[in-house]
Length: 307
Image 1 (cartoon, one colour):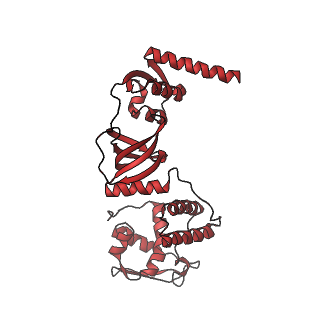
Image 2 (cartoon, one colour):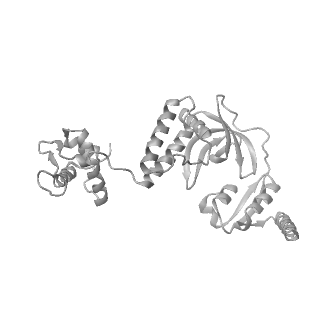
Image 3 (cartoon, one colour):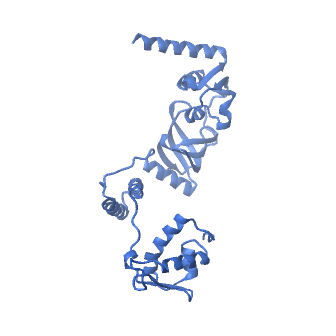
């Protein structure tokens, strides 16, 4: 239960007053204490709200037009409030947001739950009619709803997962066995933090790059066999670090403002990653790899000029 608030901002109070009338119409005789808890305010604030409502009504503002409230006994009843007996309407922006949210929800519902699919579609029809826009408005999730459902199931059951992942770090599709730990939202992307048994280390997988996901019943080996042991060291300087560059080189945000000594298993990966990063990074060492990158970049530039 939320802690009751003792103060109320004007806009929040106005919104609450509009919601109080239809609520009281359907909850006649509710206790003042329960009413305050339902609206997450103190009983003092609720008494002040009810006193304000007591002075509201239709033009003329005589006792015949004003709302008739009783709450001195500690229980609240309301009469003579037909014009505000219905809940306030949603705005156009709220309606669009609800339609987009319902569209995303419909995509994640299992096909055998026809009752839920029908309920979502009926609600979309009502909201569409209310704000007068076509019900065909839709939202396209960055990641597959089916994969998201598998990830959520694995997190809930603490299961292992077998996934196919498009790795920006290696620029290839890899098969991995992982133990999902949590989902993390970072700006416009969602990441799955997991222990990767294939790599033998913690990894953050961008959810929209997970191509397939299947729950694995068997406990995997600690680390996959055949992993290279010798690494190449290289030094890069970050010029214009972006989220993709930070992910590509496996560093954190605080490290992106300095020169770093890193390592990788493949010289080809170093060259490809530096070139893919464009002007965002500069390879400082080793000099032989730096020379290869410069040569390949010049070759691409020459071909571009030739066309």
